[in-house]
Amino acid sequence: MIIDGKQIAKQLRISIADQVAMLDRKPGLAVILVGDDPASAVYVRNKDNACKEVGFYSEKINKPEDITQAELLAEIERLNKDDKIDGILVQLPLPSHIDANQVVETINPNKDVDGFHSENIGKLMQNKPYLRPCTPKGVMTMLATTGVDLVGKNCVVVGASNIVGRPMAMELLNARATVTICNSKTTDLSAKIRQADVLVVAVGIPKLIQGDWIKAGAIIIDVGINRLDDGSLVGDVDFALAKDKAAWITPVPGGVGPMTIATLLENTLTAYNTIEEK
Ligand code: NAD
Image (spheres, rainbow, N blue to C red):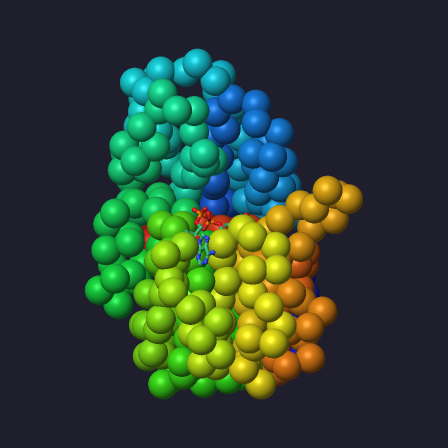
């Protein structure tokens, strides 16, 4: 069966919009875009539109490519103190003269709706999660819709980046699964995949995962987004073959992608509720 990320994300947005409709002050999200990378601009526009759709207050802040580190940090400090703003997101990647790590660490951890601040990553590691990275958290929401109990399952995560693979592995460990993390140096990847009751792939290589590697009845989550020469979008898994062996599988597009933005809204509402409770 297909795990329909578009539909699950829509339900999540409806639920968020219902909650926002009852609030006096609206949750506020600020998204900072540095430079004019077209792909980043599209992501930022989509996030801004999603905010408007659920009734959030949103600020889209465009900064020039040549902004200095100090100017960018000052902008974040301003937003840290702004009572209208509950969530701050700096669109990555940043230009090479900017220290992205220092930028993320300057965001107030209570407004860190991307969940990348070391304090929030540390909480996830300690199984005391607060604001959790959006893509892996969105995957957990998708997995929950299958009704499959993750406890004791063999989960394989392919890809070990800070934004997807590593926090994904922690999410699954926190759900009491047995987790294997693979990276570009992993030997005999196919043998690991064949053991996977749950497979999450976040690499960025089309058809890296071949259909005949999939364990019968597995759940397959394909986070990869790759644009082919003909303009079409595909994931990292050979979907046509894998879908016949898997019990559940996400499509690309229409799988994990829509969940990432819906989860960003969910995180912003969480940050808002924490601020309001204080
Ligand atoms: P990244 O380049 O930061 O990390 C890729 C990881 O894959 C690394 O850990 C690397 O060691 C590993 N890897 C590379 N080749 C491998 C191989 N042959 N076998 C096993 N592992 C290998 O990428 P990222 O930022 O984590 O993104 C991964 C993919 O997910 C990309 O296609 C990206 O576009 C997509 N993505 C999608 C969403 C979404 O919302 N759907 C969000 C983030 C990223």
